[in-house]
Length: 440
Image 1 (spheres, rainbow, N blue to C red):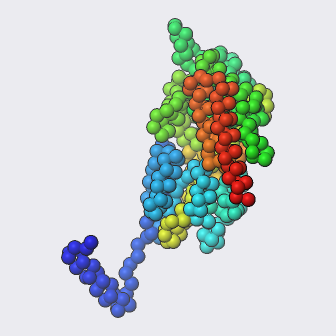
Image 2: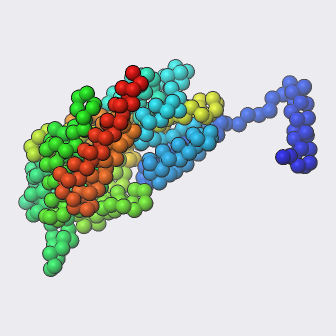
């Protein structure tokens, strides 16, 4: 309810606007102010803020404020709350698994019309494997790749060293080779406790899933109706990892904590000399000291070819934002994903550039000549695949994540952990297809 004071101020404002209108003058309009939500920290967060600063200084139509969350998951939760409240930001950096969920809720803005209105915006310049994640079921473009990523290996060059009897190329031919090398690398105290580990696989299902994919595993049958999580293709590599962690004690898992805490603990293990290497994101390169470590593509399992997920993080525009806000959001995203900016982003963070022409950027070419590790994710992308889309609303992926925790943290045999995951996944599939069949 207006007070007398605010009502009086409102009346004065209306009079001023009326007088200006009568004189043919326009009230000045400043830049459109928008927020860009992102759930990353460290060097990546700093890089985003630098690009925001450069964008704001490059033009006077849009002003972006970065709003940081602790993780992609937190960003998803906050965006869901914002959608429910009807107050959404016009630009969001999203984990790719959330994109199809939001797309099927019909809350994401299709981007083709903005592309048509942006001179020189070449959608064909985006790397196809990255862009494949960005369409909805109606083949509408509802996201743009911001960064490409895949999990690669980082290893201490003072440990994986031919002169010390550990040839990295030989050690990284298979996971079994890496386990054998780790048995030679580990150091134990007088009580037999490991004080220097051979490897830190990154906590979570992703590392285990890569082993299973390289062993021929798949989540569901070709018709999508039968779960396949308790097959030998899954059980064998997961059981190997359990044994390497809990019985041989040559591998180590850091888990828990707030946000990305477990990730940075894993990095610290290697940089501070507690572990010889780890499995991490291509985006870790901005946090690493390459006078200590080097990068390598992942091995396959049991001598089989590598079959690894190449993933992205995407940028989306929620439908609920105002039209001017959405237009401003796309202007910002077109700058963020432009060839020079994605090249810069890649150089600073280690994530793959999302535009083909980024490789033609002179600064990028000079950087790659001095920092060859930036090319390792691109080499691994040749063995890459799109991630599994869990059409049950995430129930299969959740079951796999829970099973991975049982194996990695609680030392539960893989067969038992995956049998429970199979039960949950099959129930989710049965429920999903029953609903589909009812609606035919």
